[in-house]
Image 1 (tube, rainbow, N blue to C red):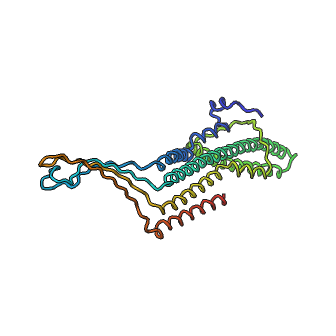
Image 2: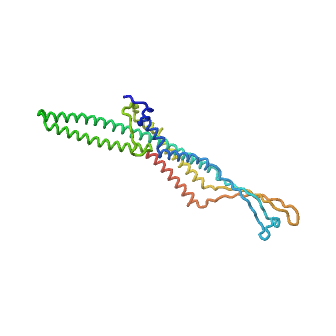
Image 3: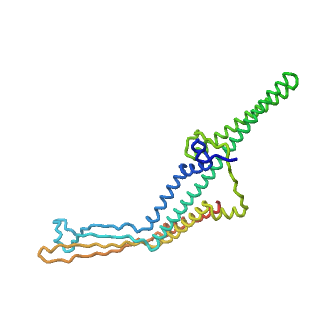
Length: 320
């Protein structure tokens, strides 16, 4: 059977199989939400792997409060300062690496959702096509059976037939009416399902072509299907990326045993002495670091948490 072209069908309001899958990919809100999430996560790695912003300050030290005279005391310093926090080496790289793995997992989830959407749209489309063809066959049978009822009734009226033939034909006709009602209900459900995938109202009309030209693909052997799924399935790739992200978070938790540093410098301007004479300006340098002293209650617990999260992701992969 040869179908009309997709463009002609779309102009007539007919939903072809290709049009159904294209509209599902373009309009489905769940897929759009997952795309937006993946795009947002792709912007995270550069943020978390970059040094914190430096801090600029302005200091007025040892200023006498009685006169506020900057030249009264030798220790009075007025000037700018700058400081920069430096995480322990390797922490920034691990944070960026974790975010990259998470972004890759989100992208694989988008691919998986897109493939699932296309598959689901195709299955529902073919179900509607089957229901349309089934109703057409039942209606044709109904027409033939109506003719048979008329023939049986005519023969009975002229004494050449049996009444039970008429009754049996009417019973079969009633069964066909029941089949029509069942098929119509199933089609309404399928129509609502495909409209949901296409982001359309549930009761929007869905008109399919009466004939299609479809070549079924060759079915691969079972072992090749398993191998193809293991190597190419986006869902499994997403789980692998999640495992990598969990491993990076565990490595980062181990890095938290080491301190972070903060370096700063400030310049102090000093005014002339009241009695005369210059005073040299002063430069102040400082370095500070945090001291991880609550190891058992904080860092060790964080490592236990990340270990459990890593095992959780591995079990998820095994489950899939």
